[in-house]
Image (tube, rainbow, N blue to C red; front, side, top):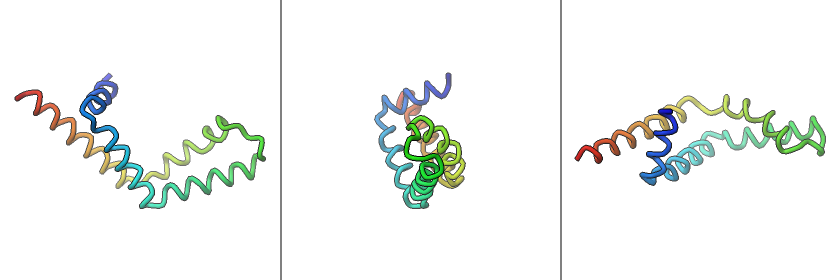
Length: 93
């Protein structure tokens, strides 16, 4: 419940797109995107060209998530917390 409420507050506040862009930039900067591309190519090579999108996604998702650096996770979490706190402060005034 809390997660859905936080998501709704971010969407309503217009901050979600900025957070998505920050995450995208950080993942590119740390090389995560290139690592995931390699995992995808290897998975396709190992399973053949007939692998479905869903099968590829299922295979790659867990590994891709585990490759996100802790520093990126912590930075994004802190930004989210700061934005939610700022929105709460606005509502109080």
